[in-house]
Length: 321
Length: 275
Ligand SMILES: Nc1ncnc2c1ncn2[C@@H]1O[C@H](COP(=O)(O)OP(=O)(O)OP(=O)(O)O)[C@@H](O)[C@H]1O
Ligand SMILES: [Mg+2]
Image (cartoon, rainbow over all chains, first blue to last red; front, side):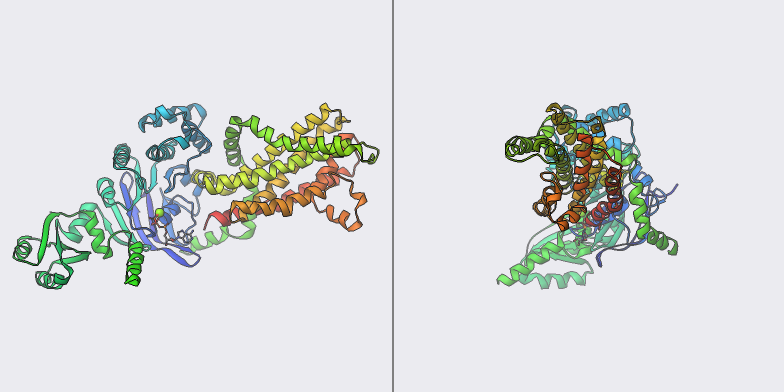
């Protein structure tokens, strides 16, 4: 059976600007595949090529065994899409949004009505079926957009930042729905810049920055490989930081500085590091905690998320001084 | 991957693009048209009212008002002269408004084109669906005005039954012209230029309000380039029953115009939306 998606040396240029820089990856059927990266990493560009919206500039991209250049229509029949921006039809009601969308897939009216009702029920939208789309909450709009992407029972569902801008409860609700869909065998392709979301949902993921893939693997693999099981966060006064870092590098642990916090990635055994910190009077506080994908990201990009913005912000601060 | 390269090259060759463009008049485009009809069914009454109030005001003010002081033209009373022209004009106006302001809102603010293109429907088919809907609106408002002037006794011949065909050609022409602007304009305010510089001159100099014979030779020749001129000649001739073989040329002019500019709205929309 062919891969759900396979990209070989895939590139995208916008008027000479390289947004995707020759990436290679494979997505298995039935898995939840995450595309992580900060703003401008190229996540949307990548998924828009997968759902045959943007033309591929160079390289090869196949979806369910078909090349996107040759068979866009038959690929699109088998894909569901939840774009980054909700683009629900504001002139239609909640239910009509599903029914009209079904018509684009050649689904007969009785079948469409049945599926629409099932989906509205599954996503907890039945009571809003006849409301204008404008009147429902942001979380409901997002759920409706996902329901719309499922109206033709696709084999792959592509979600571009499904929970950005939602409150914690709505996010959790969407995660729960996505888990259930995966259990039913649906392949999920999900972009996000929330590490917790990727950690919760994804079997495999790639971390992108500036159009390139920095790392790939399962969340636990990535954590083990990149940062180890545990991380120490130490608060140190910047003036005393150098001394601490020197001591730590003698113990061959990798560190990452962000503001007043030093992140210490512990190799195998934490006792040596903890001893060092205990005896260090320059240290304000420290704590040991299990590592997360966020640490992987921090280490790989050398900065936190929203890295382009942070750079700009730092520049402004500097000029103000 | 040389195979892939050549395939992509083929898809972007101009001749193939043009063929794709005509091929997109298909059942997928009808689905987009049907989506617009679903919305139309919700507010058809206000839509129709909105489309016909202005032409009826023209008919009342110019026909009944100005008509009192204007001499008969070509043996017709003034209101008889302008009534068929107003049918053509209102049909033009409906198509132009639908495929400019309304299409722009759907495309730019509501991102509906983007949503539909993620389904098996292509962008070319979305554009055709929009053109068909503009044509439908045009046919509808023209037909309603036609019914009004018939009730006023201003339709003199059963040839008038052919007017809807003329209205369809008219609708296609002006939907396309408006859609070309929708593919080009940077923001919605820019449509003011379209109406001031394109639509208004067309409707003033196409023989709706006065016969072009009174104008200098040059203006008469230029009018021949205006699509609405041919629509007005056809509508007026059929309404009063002054039918000659010459009308075929006017109809052919419109058909050829429609076929020639057909690929442009799609090409411009693709250039605009897909980078
Ligand atoms: N239509 C376009 N024309 C030119 N450049 C573009 C266009 N769309 C995106 N880009 C650029 O390509 C890069 C990748 O953009 P993309 O939207 O794919 O990033 P993203 O990872 O989805 O970001 P975000 O998290 O903000 O959604 C960015 O630098 C962006 O400015
Ligand atoms: Mg994006």
